[in-house]
Length: 423
Image 1 (cartoon, rainbow, N blue to C red):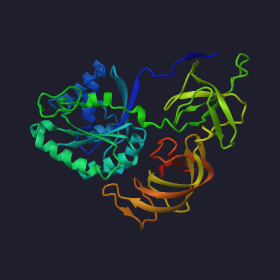
Image 2 (tube, rainbow, N blue to C red; image 1 turned 180 degrees about the vertical axis):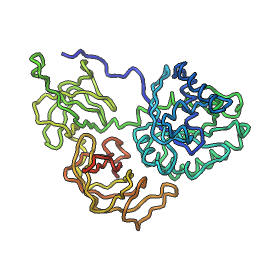
Image 3 (tube, rainbow, N blue to C red; image 1 turned 30 degrees about the vertical axis):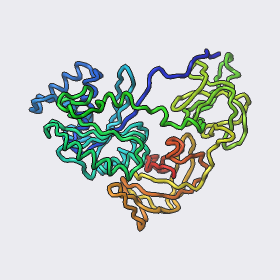
Image 4 (cartoon, one colour; image 1 turned 90 degrees about the vertical axis):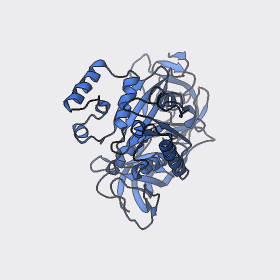
């Protein structure tokens, strides 16, 4: 029998995605965060120092800590999404280092889709660029709840308050056109470490927090939907041992709401109801479960529940939909066209889908809607109507990013070809 325990995690986790144009210093900033938070080993630092010397640099190129692909190092750009992990006494972090080029929009969408916070870098000398606007638009489309604009290379503009104020004002004005619930603008120098982990002595006019202080303390727990209970079943656990022959549990990750033993629940699509007999986390019985915990739920009744089913509340169930209206980011060279048939994966549920029509293509630089389009090309985002063979138990993406999203898969190759956000 599992041992009862509190379900509260020991340390908070923040996922954040970075985006910036070429030479904005994004990889250097991440290297600085890792270095100053003492999250890299001495031999890693020594290897970077040796490589920097061999390249003829008179400084340690911290970007080498993150640009892992050989082609990235040769070109001095970020191509693929690189995930980095580090922790401070206050919080654990997962960084998704995403590329800034327009041809890698799909990579940025992938990296930012699970982020709690988006970090956009701009070069203080260049100011805001078309790419800066595009990054902010994509983060807004993906409903990333917190946005930080880091104005980098302040040391190259003599730490000018006027330069910072102008960029801050311009970006704040642009952000009013987007859905950005929380915006923070911070002047930094990633190369020298100003306002990255420690407050800068060169910018006494700036009264806000350092970047590290901000990401350590930004509140993300309330960003998740804690009202609408959503538990997509991933796996049915039936141990084959005599000791646990009566055990039957349903494993998965909580997508929304809070579940507790004794709660009345509804299972979709069957429509059967039951109550929660217990919730297990590994070999421990817990008192409650909430996003994004992965747990096993035991029900009081022996119901027919399988992978792809949804456990929710009887009075607050998602609407089963087969006609899906969504924003889709297309990820392969062959274009998306009406009448096309694809596999669709939504939470743990799979089915087939047909493209009914493409309403418009969105220009992520200008927010212009091209209503004349009849296809979506590589890295393009547009509004698409789909018809699915099975009902999906979904919510609007702006309400729940887990139950409001899906991926499209080419049935012939098994390649993920599109990512969707349900309107």
